[in-house]
Image 1: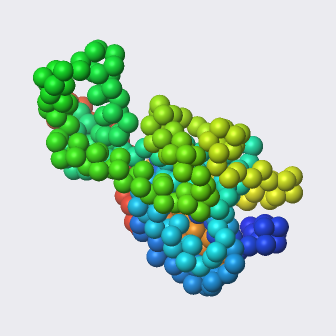
Image 2 (image 1 turned 90 degrees about the horizontal axis):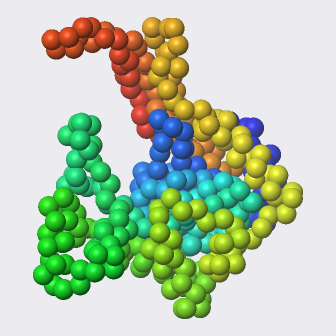
Image 3 (image 1 turned 90 degrees about the vertical axis):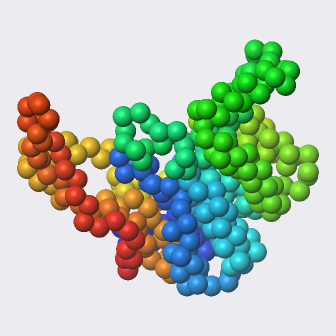
Length: 333
């Protein structure tokens, strides 16, 4: 709860001579969440209560999410301060990394990691996942599309127009042409966003291009992790190492949030139910916090029940019904 972290927040603010915002999207297995546009209104409320100040610090933990949502949040925070920094306790991947690019500096613990910012496109026209229902779609990675075309060119030696046209037609048979168009648009957009955000941190144009090229394509995989040393020494980002006192404050804050959001505890309905016939649950999945604005949390509340399901032309089997009673944001004082 926020009451358990207020002292930590006050000490971080004093240490950084700043006002602190905390944004955590949960990575609890079975209850994962992402950076989304729905968070923007809550950031506005917190920032209005903080007011215009010289410096704001954002403590960020996320696996990523909507690139435009991340872009909007960074630009919103910058309307309220001249100096903006991000603290990464454990990870700020994908869109989280993009948000870090918009800071004047990134404070990374020794276990903190960033990641590539190459986006995935997910639309109703994406390929279906076989056997997973009509609405289950395969995310189309920008780098996967580029990798397929690079494979044809460089590994298979297909360089003439007719061969490449055949390769493209094969790809278009599997991935809708409009999705391929969206992929092409996403490539240009993510580079533009990254370039504009980096203006606050890196001014050397050659360094900017190096950073963007690595984060968008040269890292090779969206799962690639970038530690503090690589972010600072290899990429040239403005990364700061916390001293021991600040590290302990960051670590204590993260551990408190980790416990509250149960980040290390998978949401497994079988385990939750145990031998019971019913289990009521409430899971906090996203936190936005500040001393002035208190807590806004995205929660899921529901009931798990064991039910009997009749298989057509088969036996009755036991299943678990997850009835969601509420899913959305709640404010806590």
